[in-house]
Length: 294
Length: 206
Image 1 (cartoon, rainbow over the protein chains, first blue to last red):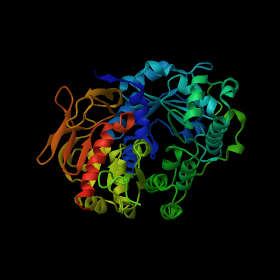
Image 2 (image 1 turned 30 degrees about the vertical axis):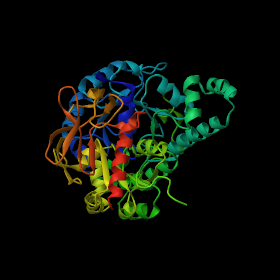
Image 3 (image 1 turned 90 degrees about the vertical axis):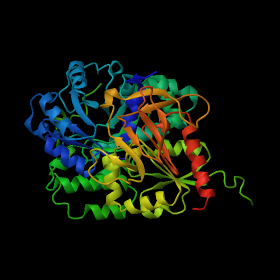
Image 4 (image 1 turned 120 degrees about the horizontal axis):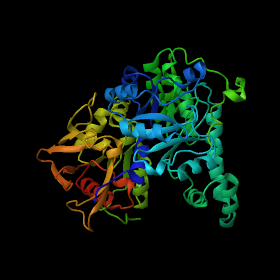
């Protein structure tokens, strides 16, 4: 019997993306540059997070026209973002045939209490998380892939590091707990106990976990891999740099050879100016995107 | 001390680790008691009894094969007679004929492959298939944005098809290609089949 939309094929696509770089693009031309540079997938957007941050206003799902242009332009998977809780935007993206949906805090949330019930879709979802509890809540709702939230559009890696370290150290702590301590811990982090037990047994999340939010250089990408990421999303870091094709290729190499400083040194030479960026510590609380999500 | 597994069991298998589901292959092999080396540079190929090219994005892996000077070493490895198995993206890279791949793959197997031939991710699927030479009933195959093997040219031959006749696995001497992902299931029979090929190849002089 043939079955589509199963958990194995949803999680499976993310497994195929491991060790790779997913790049934000806003045009078909950028998508081709990303594919040629070795991106494993592209995120089709109207504006990269740095511009969303600069422009303000309400950030929504991209124009389907734009997404379709990008889908036409490349053979690698195409992802697109919908607002948190906006299940109709998600249905539209599924109808367009995108390969993965990012229910993303980078867009303005549509629901301040509920995320999308992602189980009822055939298309898989990726969601952001800052810690183990948040990751497991998203997986319980049907997310087939997790990424750190970081702080998108800043080019500052500090929040992505914080989130990845939080998840990894919580998983390590969980593994040292007695079996009867798991119930109180699940309550404490607000996660379903069955998923918490599974993480304790396996020593990792039940789905692929990428880094995102602030990756701007090859060394940033390798840092996130060293901290335990399965791969990286790069948003504004590529097309806000001086030489996008070269930076894109360098980040791809650094993600493969994250354990080899000689390779990272070689590919980091002469990349030109990286994105300007904004220090996260200079942002006001209302400007933070990572706090969106429940 | 004598080797408890003389010539019927490979001792060291490589997984090409440029990008893709490397860990999944490694874990199946390790459960079967095989030592695994991740291959990122030409020198990592030395001393291997066999090599798996995992699933992933074929455009990405092809790019990294080129930038890491692995194309000729990989072709030489395939020509040496040692067993090589490509799953999904790996099958695309082994094929001599591929559509829409901008740079050369390893291109050693006499098969024609079409990328993403079942459609986009929402058409990804699981199905039970019968595989020639695989005892123990049907194999649950997971297809993810999978390629189709559109033609096999002798000496390559088809070893598994979907109900509609689509070829999804092929073999040619020491080379094996599957458009699906046995590494995503708990069923180790395909890995055992590959290890038997690797043992035969290393027994006949590498």
